[in-house]
Amino acid sequence: MERLPNCRWNKLQMLDLSLNNISGELPNQLGTLSNLTYLVLSGNKLTGKIPSWVWALRKLFILELRGSKISGIVNEDHLNSLADLEFLGLGSTLLQIKIRPDWIPPFKLQTVLLESMQLGPEFPSWLKSQTSIKLLSMANSSINAIPDWFWVVFSRADFLDLRYNQISGTLPATSEFMAANTLLLSNNRFSGTIPKFSRNISYIDISSNSLSGTLPSDLEAPQLTGLLLYNNSISGTIPFLAVLIRKIASIRPICKHADWRSSKLPRRFLPIHALFGYSKPK
Image 1 (spheres, rainbow, N blue to C red):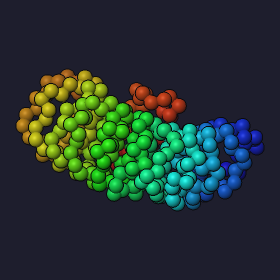
Image 2 (tube, rainbow, N blue to C red):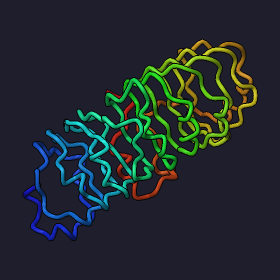
Image 3 (cartoon, rainbow, N blue to C red):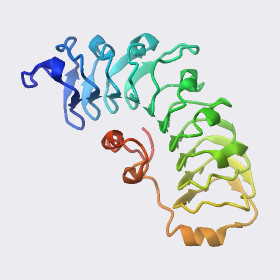
Image 4 (tube, rainbow, N blue to C red):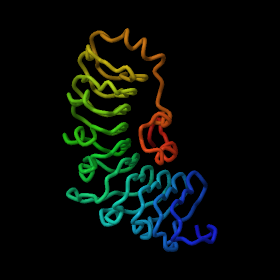
């Protein structure tokens, strides 16, 4: 990064070096980036720890470091200065997030991408205050339980991905009131019956759980294009089969999490969301 063009660092607002082959550690010092709002270094071969100057970027609203070998500990002291942060992407790294359960962040995140990290076994309680989240990806994060407040706090999220954890419990009866259009909960330990889902839902993957009972008889999901229920213990008939035949031409696997072109998320986030999509987190 020291080889970047000579410029006035305090004028720089966006720095995106994603999807390259950049290796080595981030420099310990890098000019005065007082106006940087957009730092995207994902999809590289970076190693080492996150230097202190990153945590001093007070105007930062996008921090995207996924898909690298960056290591070290991230705690509340690092995040306390990032009051404008809206996008946090630290997934698929060697980072450890160790934050006090009672910490209340100064920011209001809209996107949290923490897949393939050791976050569990408990769901991070510091996210309880983040009621503005639209996209949450915490697949393959060693979580074995989610609190009751999860379904309330993230009821307005468009995209929820908690696949490949060990989450037990039942799906909430209030599922039909959630705003999510994509719900990915496969490869967990959910049990009980399948509730009625929201009319807004377009893709549901609750395969490979321990769900049982019959399917809801009054499923109304005019936008539904994907429904994955395999490897459960569901019984009875398919009361809405005729609806499914009309609505689902073919049930397809997820390749890129979702169709970002139809996303309702702020446009400035869309290119970043498309950087990584995993059919199975590694």
